[in-house]
Image 1: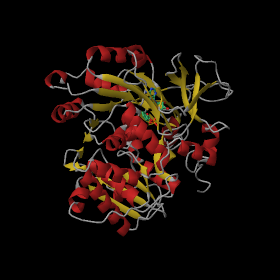
Image 2: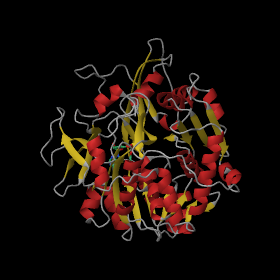
Image 3: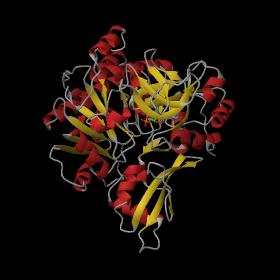
Image 4: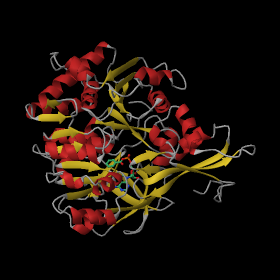
Length: 525
Ligand code: OOB
């Protein structure tokens, strides 16, 4: 394509095609296929409306046609930002229809994040869906950006439900802009070791391969009812097996606005949900909820847990308390590789491991600090290369040098080992990132912002173990000599004045006199 993107090499493309992994279909082809096959089945239920597969296809076409009229063209990057809703799915496929490439922003992203992401990708479009009680619109977010962006020309804000109500009576013929299936389909976001999120270029062929296989591994079929309880644009909710896996299988997707027991238990009972994906902090919240006894959740068959490490104690407690539900651990990353415990694995494997990869062609190696492979069973950094793992971040040559080995393996930054049955056990990590309830926070990003505070001389942001969240965000602060104190509230207000995502706000702070340093002069965290 160009030097912003590192494609798969020709030999691997041919190999994955001849194995039947890559099928030459785009995401819109995929939607057409499913919607024709399951036309009258219910595709999506959210708090506003219920739509069939046929209606989903029509609405996506109508939205795509509308986007073309406002100037969205093939290969444009379009920021997509929507809460958990059917609107997200319609907007997603509407963008695919035009041949443009969505960038999956989190709904909570604010001017700071949107600016940096849009700049890095030279995004042309910005589609945002707002909640009724929200006053942040796309226009408002653009206005509060640190600087103007010339590339960003098509900006459109919708109220929740508006896409559906305006487009529902239109009748366009289905005529999607064709795209090469080996080209970038969209950009996912990643946390990382430095600065703002990195952009993950996923192609049609490789992503859809992971979707189809994930749907099979998770046991989805047309009788399944899947609850979306985590942020919908997250890779886990999207493809592991996520909404795309559900659409591939002809399943019904029930979208929860949030993951709270109150919201989700009601939906599970009402719609006879069979399948849900959760982060460990939600498992804890659900398992300890006093509401549990008031609902009939017996329809649930499979609970997938991933995004951060599920403790074996919690896993064991879960399998004992819910003997009729299958627990499936999911260790994945937006960069590609996803591992699952299989539904028919023994309890020992399901409670103690993070499973094994989707594909027989996923290569996983455990290395030491010198990039040397470790003997089986030894702990080291997990690196990987395979038919649905990226070869480099988008527009990030310097970061790619560190994040990939010279022979093209992605360095996950996670520590772990492979057990005698070939299952991965994640034991920790060597990348600098905070995993707060599955959301990845980059300490250096917060540190850079906090250093701008007049009272702060130096700051070190760390993750502190937390029973519910896994980790919480803590800032150790050295004050300027003239200053005596700073409160958590001051810190949070300062960050909010810079328009950052509220989920990145420190949970606690400590004022310290000095930091300890490592031999190479880095702050000891
Ligand atoms: C998922 O994707 P990301 O990109 O938000 O985060 C990936 C990182 C991994 O490198 C690892 O550090 C952590 O999240 N992680 C886990 C885990 N699942 C993810 N750490 C321990 N145990 C697990 N089960 O989080 C993601 C993407 C697709 C499917 C599932 C999760």
